[in-house]
Length: 614
Image 1 (cartoon, helix red, strand yellow):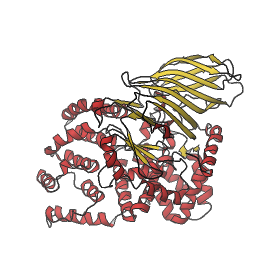
Image 2 (cartoon, rainbow, N blue to C red):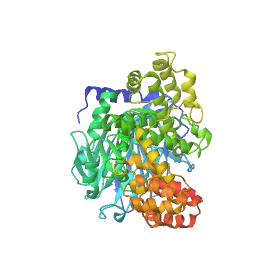
Image 3 (cartoon, one colour):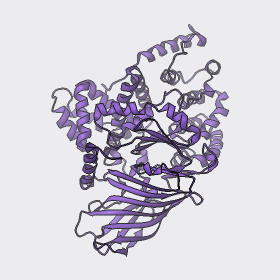
Image 4 (cartoon, helix red, strand yellow):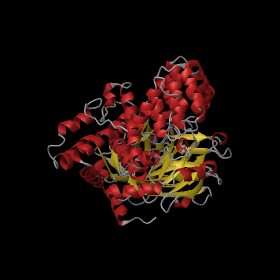
């Protein structure tokens, strides 16, 4: 697709800023960014479903920062390196010496490549291994179609290095291209221009002209069909879920249009969705041009489409403006959660947006009591821990509440100008929390003095917990649900008289999440009989009910809970249940279920649940 003038300018800005972004200090990479930066990757890979590996080469185009340097250091994890070639200034290719260090538990294995002269390009021939943390390989029986294998990547946070030797840090950005070969009846797609993937022939070419951090390089391959939703949006999915996904997410174009009006033109050309198998460990992944989506949000009533709004919002916050290290994750997720909610308000109305705010804020306040106090700061200190540990409700919802706080204090008009200016100023750049604080102080706090102090902003960012004056979103609809709940619990109303017929999923979630954790078995049974909660087809509602039932010892859920835990791999919907089962004396049952379910889980989910049973 031809880039607009704005998009082209932003892409060039992304390339020219690569050197500046390299100055951020990221403890989770071995890369020697002060010496050399890879400005473009070209991947040439075969997808080998039988051996569960990618095999081929990656070619790095190098930009040297240090005239004396002759070494390129890359991140890897569980990769087999065959050989390294490099191109000199005269265009000739030479063999390079390299050393692959022993694996570090978190960072992986340091790959050091030595050149006799500064190379213009370096080509690493390699293959991934079946245990690659950033790839999942599914047999045909584990897919919806049951006829073809499926493979997909999950590169965030530092899993790109498990399938590409790369400078795996969000502090740098690179463009990329790729040639991917598959069996002829398998379609491959990537976080790039997928126009060459429309013809299913086993040989696919891709191009990503905008510079992105390596964690946004993504690939998927399987029995994928394609259907457009609008001139700018489409869905890739297995045939069995394609039509339902199109019906569920056909408001995506309206979301793009509303966000364009609020925060500036969408800078990535197309915005398509890839529907993944149920084993996908996340709700979605914001891979540019092609967000990866869990089928658990295909509810049939668009009740969970805020997930699409969230992944789309990343096109501005995260993909366009990126956290420079994983300790700055809130810059990605807090802004994205805020923009997501603004999109939902514009497309579906204020009432729904506030209900979603309230649900998220309640979830955050509950989680704050269950994680270490230092990890409740926005600017997190990982101190060598796996950056996957940075992902909790804190960067998402505390970050969102901070921005809601600023919006309420300064007014939406002034705050919208600030947010749009921020996206423009850092388009195709990576920044740290410290850099953001400076920008916030200059362009909002000082520009409108006497409203919010710099100390107050720093309290939000650097101190644990929530400030005493943090927003507490409240919904009139939820207040009415609370009144009905109280009436039932005190015996003045029967379940069959509660006005649940017109409740939204959000009202149901509020109802279930706020019921007492010590309900009698009689009351649990009555709820289930009245509303058939154990057999809910909405994954979020089922999860909320199972959590309540496990805590209250309600045994009738267990056949359905077995199917829930075995049938999906989304960590949000399984990990808390495993923890609750262990906590409430059902460890042996949970472990038996897990042993059956584990082969179908993504490596990230396996690692998380393994730790519960250690």
